[in-house]
Image (cartoon, rainbow, N blue to C red; front, side):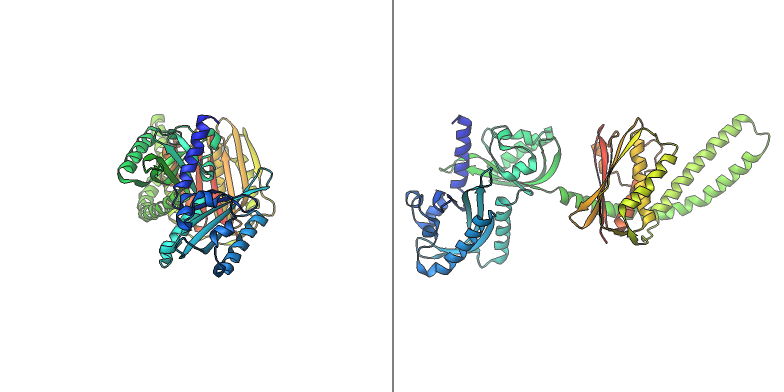
Length: 486
């Protein structure tokens, strides 16, 4: 065994042996192959007395626990027979003949061919917390998430040199790295930009001084994507209580941050809506007079060419202001949608032909459709939703002035929503602009009013849906719309 493999094994062994949890590994016959110090402390037995013995004899040592023994055995048999994880709260007798309440997590370990290789038991001693139900619930949830969840939590350990010595399944799923790819690589692989690296040094210093640190930071996945997490860091001690490294637990909070952003966005849009509602009325009146007078002057004969040219420029700018005001009026009108049953695929198909009549759009666009068959209907305002699709399609075309591909995909999301993905292969949106993309008056186009996407945002919100955007510069942009089924 090479030194790296040996150190990895030792790190994992120390993590298990020093955990404040009961840890057992059983072979296919139910005999104990691995146990940790917590098991020894509670049962009063040494490892030599435990290894090789059947788990029932260790955890249930008198006839008074026969019923509890059978209940636990039934749960264990279910896990083995159906090769699935289970949770069980039971009672065992400790070395002083007292009852100890243990919350168990049972996980069958399967080979690549899906054959049973053993059973992993993790138990949390909740005796002192039994009467405090609120605290007990929090501990149960934390335990379940750490050992069972593979999507929300990532557990990894580094040594004092900053090299990763343990990388759990949750970390693999969340960050995209396989253990073999990242073990003994430096933790800076997960903290790529300079701010993140400085922040990492600060975190480690805080753990050294206070023993614990918790904060929101950004980590980097294998593909280079950065995402927000709630990171908890603690000391990792060796068997003699000396600092041997650091334990990290990261929870992906991307969805929470999106929700927070949507709430802030809605509040901003509401405030801006109230402001512009009054402004548009005051602008429209003098604008009507200006446009009328200009029209009368331009109809006069004998105007000098240079004067007529200047007046036409003024008239064109007045028309531009009128379009902006019309957009503002549209933005501030919070008309509720006129709901009807809509097939979202049909609504999209009906909009696409109009793109060919739009003179400003290039014809060098390849449209690729992937529309889900038998997609349930939604309740919505057909005109408003088609306005959203038309706006997004035109934006996609304009982002691909030299040609490209427009992809339109519909599908089910969580069996509750119709999801529409509209993607282009255009120039993309810079990261610092993404957070403002739905704000009124914000535009990256030279002649844009900055109202199109904010109007789309309001329409989708009034349909109890959501609209999000993903983009990479020079690679393209995807708008994701979710609308509830009727």
